[in-house]
Length: 115
Image (cartoon, rainbow, N blue to C red; front, side, top):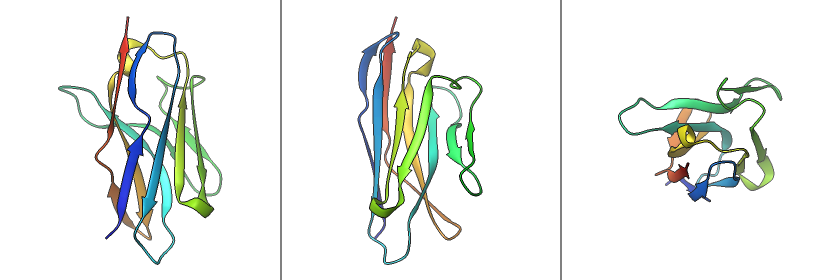
């Protein structure tokens, strides 16, 4: 059973920082941490940052220059460093992992940014 677990969320004041972590396990096949998404109340899930082919990375325009995605393939872990947080960054953040073309998601971690 593949498991994806996000951690590191919390309550932070505007301008602060948080570092989210994602740990994937439970497969004999390689698990690729693909990216981070978020969903705010009443809104659809949206892309925050993701790895594309090779080492390219896509960032949502709203987080460019503030957020940095990284991963450790050997450990099946991923990270999202979030700096200069804004109230509009408040959402549940989800990690996306893939095994071949199958997507796996965690339960998410809540990030709340107060003004």
